Amino acid sequence: MGKHDTKLLNIGFNNGVVASRIIAIVNPSSSPMKRLREEAKERGQLIDATQGRKTRSIIITDSSHVILSAIQAETISNRLSDGGAPKENFKEKE
Figure 1 (cartoon, helix red, strand yellow):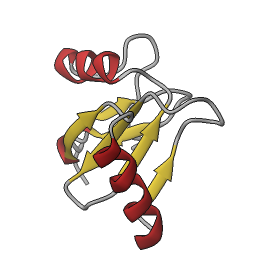
Figure 2: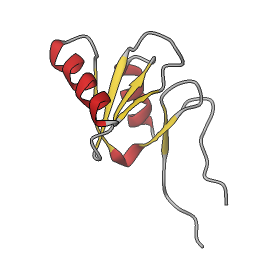
Figure 3: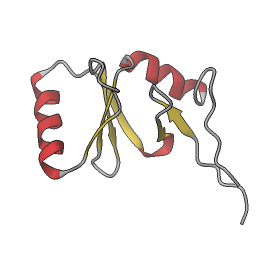
Figure 4: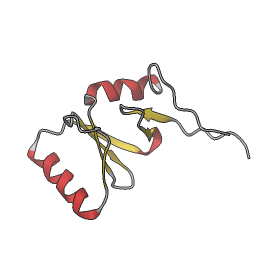
């Protein structure tokens, strides 16, 4: 098999999300985002990648999964714009 172009975006604590599947990165503090989080939990589509830290951003994917991150939304957006993670890069094993 050939090499895949799947790019993983570092969302903190060595957790990665497939960058091409992200449709939104939002701040978690508003009431609609809190509701979105609860609805995803009820559907079984909530992924908590905060490692017990405070949720600082919510990532929404094209599969309706809601991912919680302890990294600021702005930081994750910048990483997405820069094409990935700053220091540690995720690479698919061949």
